[in-house]
Image (cartoon, rainbow, N blue to C red; front, side):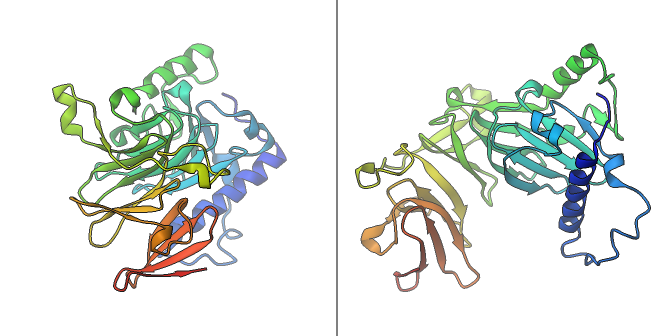
Length: 313
């Protein structure tokens, strides 16, 4: 694969470098106005590109639609797109690696990215859940070079075959309620939770050696969307999953409000309790223990669990 950059590409890659540098320095060294000008190298000229580069990149874009950004414990920046798979930027080595279905990645659209304690990266995609083996994080490319000749079709095909070994893809046959996965969480005990268009599911790796499905369906009632004609037409969709400071798992549903699971009991919180809207897109627990719910059609709610009261904005 030839390394050729137009002026537009150089500028776009320089912007990416500045963004990644800023992210990597958060909490460490403040970024000053001289941080970039003091460098004697052009970062865009040092970036190596591997994988199935999407057409938008020819116009200087990583992808037309980047919907998720995640930084792993090694400092790599993962850019989840809405149709071009995922791209990994290694700021230490200056390399961009594209992972698409050609390289074994499970889907085209990336809706969530998390990392487990072993360094594996998990992706919620439109083709199921994809797990990337963290022990092979730089394989088969190391030190900005590949073992294969990426400028030949044979070398590129061999590269793709080896890269595909880094991925494990989980779909409905593995217990997911749907291959359309919209949310993902790793809880404090290391369990992977997924929200799909067919409900929630939890991954249990100990099931795999026994031949059982890796994911176990978690029953959350389907919504009646007749009151929400403009809602996404998936009554079992789980938009978001979070864990609070006491260990409870919260689910944002597509028409039934929010659910709290304490390990035994599933409790529903909805409009009848004061929630602003039953289509819950996102949930956050603040430092005071209050919960914030972002809805699709009713604005924002703040919930005080000590009083059970809501304040709607």
